[in-house]
Image (tube, rainbow, N blue to C red):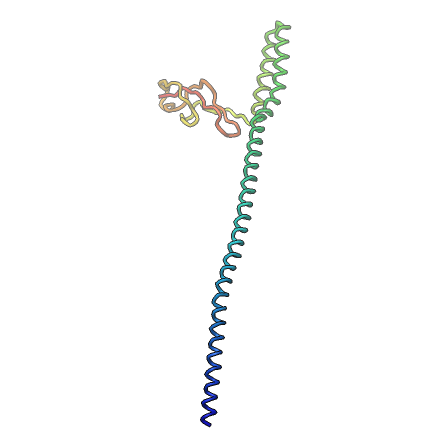
Amino acid sequence: MSKHTHKDEEELKNKAEENAQEDLQNEGNEAFAPEESLEQDREEEGNKLEAALAEQKDKYIRLMAEFENYKRRKASEIQDINKTAGREVIVALLDVLDDVDRAEIQVGKTDNIDQIKEGIELVFNKFRKTLFSKGLKEMESIHTEFDPEKHEAITQIPSPSEDLQGKVLDQVKKGYYLNDKLIRHAQVVVGQ
């Protein structure tokens, strides 16, 4: 039995060695396989990143081009608006201009001062009415507190009474608002 056992032990030992060598070979192959696999994974990931980067660059370029087109379009629209901004007021004033032309003809034909005066007053009233209908509004300045945001002081004079000190006594030029926005300061005389 000891012969068998010894022989069996030797066979077992040889088999163990063979198995160990096979394991080593397999481990060696597996050791190389993950490196190649990692390299392929890195390469694939690099390709994916490059593709994603190219896609983002393309989106960025398209977005920038779209934005430039938008800016050009807006600049063109603003230019068109600026060219025709006063068109509505000018068209409205053409009727007044027609009345001025008619009044000029009538002044040469008649000697009646009252008729001329009446015609001129009609034209002036129509002119004012047209401007006021477009949002123009006169500033009320006389006997109001002087406000440097609205008034331009031309001169100061002694006030006739104490309650008029620091107030507007006279107006050299009227101030105007257009749609509640100040467009011209009133030139005024202030009491001191």
